[in-house]
Length: 121
View 1 (cartoon, rainbow, N blue to C red):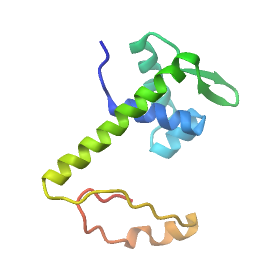
View 2 (view 1 turned 45 degrees about the vertical axis):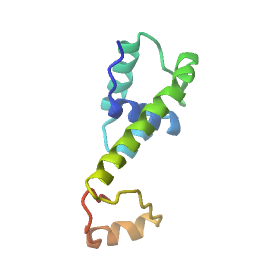
View 3 (view 1 turned 120 degrees about the horizontal axis):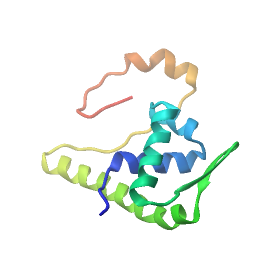
View 4 (view 1 turned 30 degrees about the horizontal axis):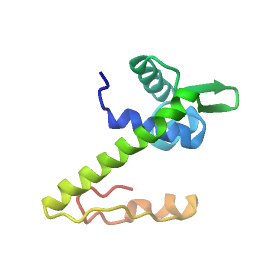
């Protein structure tokens, strides 16, 4: 039986996207150990190797590559579910991405108003 845990799936997807457990941990705000543990938990739950590890990073194993489209679909469905629930509550929800230089973001990020529920920087 597969128990759906969107957080674990999102961690796996970020690790695959960045090709590194360490870089995924940094991007998601976790420790390298926590991300490694999540990947190991998924591999144990599904009884298969999902990633091939090397000194230069990680890549999907053949089993991981076969499962990737399903993991992506589950994460996309979870995001759509959250948006639909918010819409039914009368909230407009979406993603606004703002690109800037790190030096600018560090200086101005704290002064950004937070007028909407669910807003995060």
